[in-house]
Image (cartoon, rainbow, N blue to C red):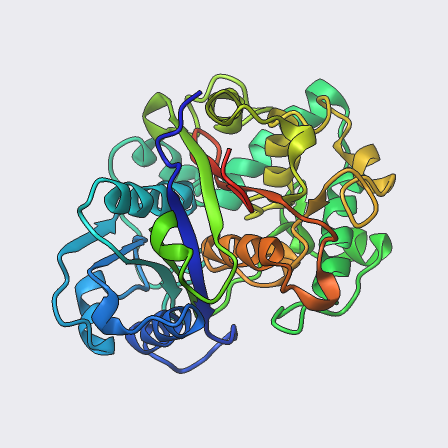
Length: 382
């Protein structure tokens, strides 16, 4: 068993309000989330010597945010280029920095501003590399790519729009308990089926809810965590998989995703399995991302996700609670960083009306298609 992350813990969480058009700068939101995360664990900027974030746009750099909140000397700084595929890797990197002695207290954050909307384009679009072959057909953005994955799954396993709808409806039910969620109004399966097409077979409610906002967590050693206000949430293990050069077109089985290869590594490194997980924060840029990764992590067999959700097995009183905050589909799309906030909140027992009773373990996944990762948090070390 690989115990490389044993000895690290998340001790603080912070976030801003999520809004469609905040009018705020990325720096101001990132600074607010970082300050809140430090205040949450009783630390100050003077205690911080590490900062890291990830992203490709709509962000503020670690050195900018550290300076803005008054960190006197940033000894370890890492700005990771990537999107949803790199979230858990970034968190694991912060833990590695702590355990290797490069830093003592690390703030991990992600911020998205109004200038970042992944479906918009202004002016001429030029593309190079592999994308130049898809460009003339307008095949350029994630909902198009993963709609093709979903179609293949439907062909191979008989999954349906109603199966996708079961995921969307349940996550909106969860979001109704979350005052921080942007999408809280309940939806029915008919609402889902009658919503407008985005890229067939994806409808409006198959796609994440893009917002402005920031989320930050504080990572330190388990030893230091013992002296801080909240019950520590320990990192139990992490794993990644990146294949085929990150090409969605060259991926060899479009009914699965990175999780096909990440899951066996993660379960091997932690000694856990799907049935040991109490809370599953599944990266949900699209409903199909939940479907494919949920299968790959072994919660159910291929083609059974719709029945699993309809039977109540993925909600309160079932086998595992999936995205109790509503996920990226309903709480808001902070590139998956809000999954980490929710996982920590649940394992502390501080999630209020949406608390998962007796939650001791949380799986958090990140990414879609050919690249991504996952980690497990726990209330106790292995």
